[in-house]
Image (cartoon, rainbow, N blue to C red; front, side, top):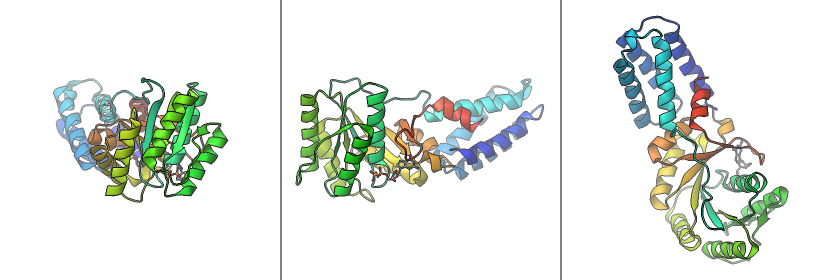
Length: 296
Ligand code: GDP
């Protein structure tokens, strides 16, 4: 995670801290290199531009040239700017609503939606002592429904029994009703995905949203798809409205561009990251820790 950026920024900034006085020109040159490193890490161009401009302005404003350890100051400015970019504080899933709290999971096929639904459910049961009910709304793919059932069995989380022929929005309504009757605190709706966004998918999501009234709508996106993940988040937010994101396959993403651009471009927080196939490979996303890691 973030390995490329860590290496590149590390050597650029080390170069600065290893020296004494810095001129404005030194800072500008370093920022040009930082800019290149961020672009190579697949961070969105619009994000990169503002980032280095702000660091340069602050460095010059702080009369960096006159400070005792100018290099360290630049490193701190880059760190603070990374934290600002990522959104300062981590934003957890919000369960502050009347039970059953409905969480709707949306995203493309293969993004890790079903796996992530089960990971979240298992964690809520274990750590937060919540009683969770999961329901698969993927009526087109019986294999997806079976996958969720198996994950439920494996993690000890209840799943809504499948009724053949029932439509997604009707299944969602039935899940909420079953949760009310069964005393579940949380309902996780694992919606259908497609290989790309299309109108019927968006209409289906809108219908489910209307019927189930979710408190959270989480987009699950594959971090390895980089800027496509960011564009996807923007589209889903415009069409369905999302409350946050889960970025999966962060274990395989050495560049991290999607994670770094997401908040700035979409205004929505990354709430969780997936770091592997196992059920416990789920982490909260903490901007400060990420910035520390990148500048580690
Ligand atoms: P869905 O079609 O969106 O429901 O995707 P699935 O949940 O079926 O996931 C597709 C594949 O990605 C499965 O093999 C998962 O085990 C794998 N997967 C999901 N999340 C992660 C992750 O964070 N890291 C890795 N390495 N694999 C993941």
